[in-house]
Image (cartoon, rainbow, N blue to C red; front, side, top):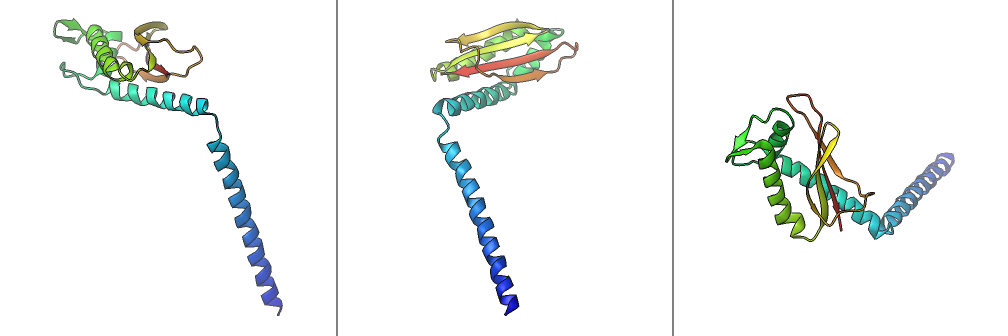
Length: 156
């Protein structure tokens, strides 16, 4: 008789634990669902910016170098030349073309910025974003040791 009572108590405690886990999971699920559309939109824009820059920097060009390699060369020695253009000119040209055919076409506001040694250069911009908007940021290494950071801020 005693072991039956003990087993029943263990089962009840197990059920209480399961109910508590479900309540906590439900609380966080509801909280996530009612988060403001603005927060979700900001998160989506940050993810879009990060993924876009990642893809852009890995994009091959007709120079047999990626856009990231062109920006890196631009910040250091400018050894790469393509179609009579420097690595800086070619990287900016390809970036502008891709931005125009994607984000600009989708009516997204954006600022595409390259920062070298603390100096920012706006490569392309469409409807400037709020200064509080979070950018997708990618630091790149250069052969000269200079710091190079590529940033994209996307907004609606």
